[in-house]
Amino acid sequence: MEDSLNIKQIWDLLKKNKWIIFISMCASALLMSGYLYFFSAPIYQSETQILINQSVPQNTVVQSQEVQANLQLINTYTSIITSPRILRQVSDNMDDAYSTKELEKMIKVNSTSDSQVVKINVESSNAADAVKISNETVRIFTKEIPKIMKINNIYILSEAVLEADTQPVKPHTALLIIVASLLGFVFGIVIMFIRNLFDRSIKTVEDVEQTLGLPVLSMINEIKDEDVLERKAGKRRKK
Image 1: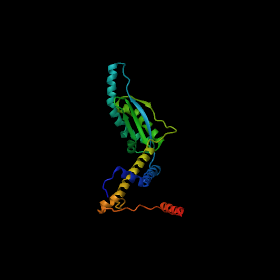
Image 2 (image 1 turned 45 degrees about the horizontal axis):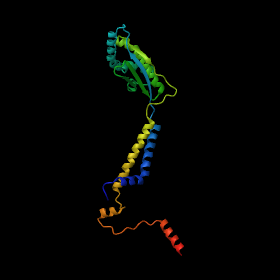
Image 3 (image 1 turned 180 degrees about the horizontal axis):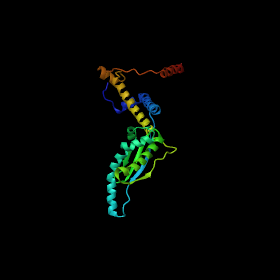
Image 4 (image 1 turned 180 degrees about the vertical axis):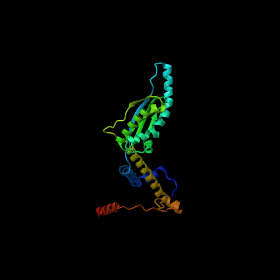
């Protein structure tokens, strides 16, 4: 039997094993759906934006220097936002529902280069808690920063709001099911090739000559029931 397959043979294999591939895809999609429905908790996200700035005299040079100084402070402020001093107060205001370690994992502080706007994102399995944690973190940070840095240059641009139709940001259900189906397709293809690899049955004339090393003298075609019936009907008509 040939060790290599041409395109036609691969296509024939695909047609022959189409149900295996289809079942593999369906099984993978069902398993992923079951995991998402029974074991995976939806994750909601809230966002609050703050501006790092300070009122200075209307002088272009002074303003430019102040902006650069504020940009350099962003990394420091990012560390302060997720520091135990801030998160401990947030935890207390949340009735100790979350520890400081849990809050640290839930809160993400993001900022773009050359921007004085900082975004505080909070992810939680409870949409209301995500909103409250985000707003409490910003409120406490704004209150504590003058004590820590001896400067008051934090302005809240937008607070997190709990929307009536808030949708979870994780998991991406449709995407994960599609990925699972594709993995099922690949798994079905692997099964197909493994079956073909270990299949040593003789199916063609070439298989006889290559596997047994014997010449083929003649072939007996498959006789189908329809052919037998047609021959009998033809004999009857002749009589």
